[in-house]
Length: 450
Ligand code: TYD
Ligand code: MG
Image 1 (cartoon, protein in one colour):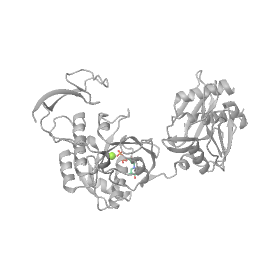
Image 2 (cartoon, rainbow, N blue to C red):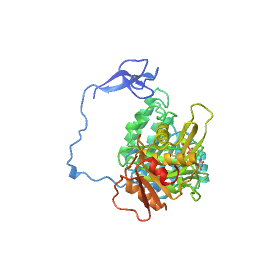
Image 3 (cartoon, rainbow, N blue to C red):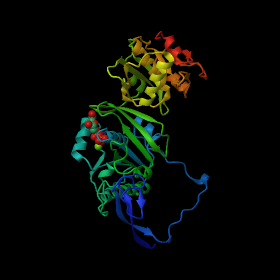
């Protein structure tokens, strides 16, 4: 094959390529990020090995997945990891990516898999002492502290692990390239080397990727396009809850959610998240209402908490954590106008238990109930759960996936469920009394709040 050297420019931020130098990247708008790169390009097709078209019936089904043995992780992966694939685990520094993968590696090694952990950030002694401390030390686990990608690839070819963990991809470099580690060219090269390696050895590779505050992978999004599966590990730094979501999955659904709690002994799976988010709800307290939300395909019961206090400023505060502030403004306006709950001279604070972030309209009715309950200092019986989208006219509308939500509420011992009178249900839950309402006024009146 005839090769020619041609220079071109790529953006360090997003990987956008251009044949000429530009002061500002046309794709992401960053200034001064275009860098020259020499790349070998094939001038003519030449002789390549040709792939033959295959009849679908003659193609073998997917090989069995490798189960990690951590249920929440396996589920988000789509039932385990697929041999020959690349999985990117993104998250902010300190969120627990190394911990999760150390636990995954130990669990896999304990199940007899050959696992190699490559760290460019921590020493072997540090990793071992952490493993010992959180009691996941598996003597069969291989550790390699290295940042040169060629050495990593060579070691992997020699050892032939079934699972390879690279922590983090941003610390890896290819010294044949003259650009700096962590830059887009280095990153692309390292990821593509891993791609070749997993296809060749049929291993699964988990790559850790640090995410910056803006939520993008430090460096470019480009890595996301190169891997088969992108998982994000999220949570508030000062809260112990950690959520694992798939943002992309070539081998499974992206609507699965894994829930963990960070403890002194490492990450612990939260097997019953609803129970975790609800806390204890024995005594009725004003300003709280339970809602069944859907996190992907998983129904979860959460508590909406509201606090309404006299305001000292001309434009009262509307503060929300865990829900969209525009949605809150709408709910407040509907309460004022359609249910005559006076809030114009009050500050309104709304939060969701457990530090979840929810952007579902199904939250509306619960939010309205919690706010009105706090404003009027009237409580709602704790065994009641609310399900409804509230329109600008104050009407309570049905929400999606009713049956799954009802089942979850019933399972957790709720006794009554308030929903839109227009909701059509297939089958009735036995232990749950259904209260149909037409609008927010109806709902508030049903509980003696107005
Ligand atoms: P780590 O896995 O190193 O995060 P990342 O690789 O995403 O940067 O986890 C770091 C944080 O987790 C650190 O602040 C301490 C905390 N932690 C615990 O609370 N308990 C534990 O058992 C471990 C190992 C870490
Ligand atoms: Mg780490």
